[in-house]
Every structure is written in structure tokens, then in C-alpha cells.
Image (tube, rainbow, N blue to C red; front, side, top):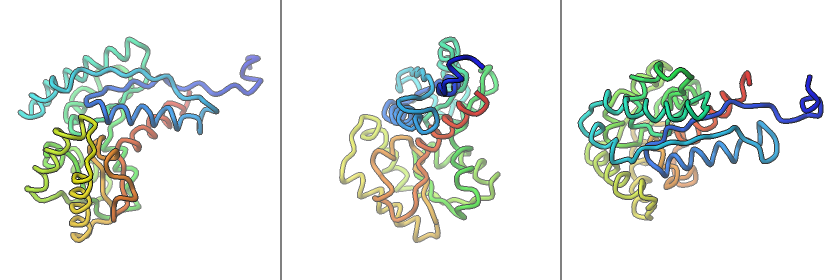
Length: 241
């Protein structure tokens, strides 16, 4: 044992790479890793973190057209920047883009945590049916359907009109750091409608939504996908390090 280890130095942790897509959610994920790292690694300590992002504008065309291969190649290019910088573990704090993540996660050479897998693991055995909030592309797509089904968890999504309104709020307000009282009230109404349909918790499945809706704002328990992913990354970074 080295002198430093013998004197109780903090354990080493894997270098976390954040493949960012939208800024606000990625920033929340980064802050969570840094602020909560001390509980695992000691006072003022957290894993080394590197973040890389291409402009959201580059992700929007493949997202809108459903060209997940193109989105995946962009994610892979970002991931390679992070691996070259020393990242040993990758995460993407963007729910919508995860069909692209699934296409390229095995090509990066380092482990890549999947946000919906982590949310599904957090829900399993605790919740029977979840309400899912997020972009229209997410709630109408397969990302959560497949991961929740694998864990035996059912889910509901907002009605089509609410999906469009939520999608507009996300892309016109939340990604720009605008968190308006009217938007908060609308999300609260949607959560209440999901509760009336038998949901026993709600997934905040856009990484900006936790900046608008706190647990105190919701009639249902919340599964905050951003912080769930950040905490999973912390655990993985410390495990076996």
C-alpha cells in the first residue's frame, strides 16, 4: 500500500465523459455529479469529468426525421473526443437521442450507461405504472417502452394535444433556460391527468424538466432521469476503481 493510501486518501474514480446534446440538462447532470461526489469520495471530491457537445442545431434534423443512424454518428464523434481526453465511462443526459445511443454504444471502447435503463432499474419493484413526460419524439418512440417492459413496468403517455404542447415548451423554453410559471402549471395539470389514469409515479423524461418541476410541484412521486443517470454514473465510476 502506498503512503498516500495508507493515510486515508480518497479512492480513485473512473473519468466520466458527458456526451451533451442540450445545455441545460447536461449542466444539471454535471452539477449533480460534482455536488454529490463528495458523499462517495470525500469532502470537495468527485470524479474527473469531461463534457463535449455539438450544437443542438446539428441534432435537430436527424431527430425530426427519425434518422437515428445520423444522430448516432454525431454522438459517436462526440464520444471519441471524450475518450481521447481520458474518459473511461460515458453518459448522455438527453433522453430523446437515445435511439442513436443504442446504435453506437458498443463502438466506443468504454462502457456507456443508458438513461432509460437506469430509470427502469430505479422504478422496478417500486412502481407499477409510470407516466412518461418528454419530447414528442421520446414518448412516441421505443426508448422507454422497451426498457420498462424488460423490468415489468407499465407506462402511460400524455394525450396527443398535450404531447405537442410539452414538446413546444421543451424546445422553445426549457432548452433556453426559460422556466415559466405557466409552463409549470401546465406540466402539473398533465401530471394530474396521468395520476387519474392510474399512474403511481411520473418520469421526468427530458433532462430539462427537473429544472421546471420539483418533487414538491408534482402530485405523483417523480423519477428525475437527469439525476438518476448522474447518480448511476457516480456509482459506476467508483465501483471497482
